[in-house]
Image (cartoon, rainbow, N blue to C red):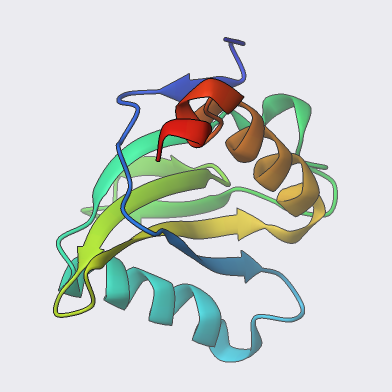
Length: 128
């Protein structure tokens, strides 16, 4: 395991599908990120992993969001790459939902997820 990938649980998935929302120029009006977030809430998704943005995000191109709370306290929201899992109601399958994935890190995020989170040894696959 690496410090960049934080796995909170290693879910057992049933016929998983991947739903990804990538921030950036291709997320017109935040349609993808809002839709993925909606599906995650609708399906009762649980966060199971995240990727630390420090090594994977170009902070010159993707800035953290800064806002004021109660007009006094500054709140900083850093870019995140978060993985959720949920059972899709009525579909007899699970979904892995990637929310707020920064486009520049999408390849890294998917590679890390496949390598560390969903990978199972060939012997396990042969028995299924």
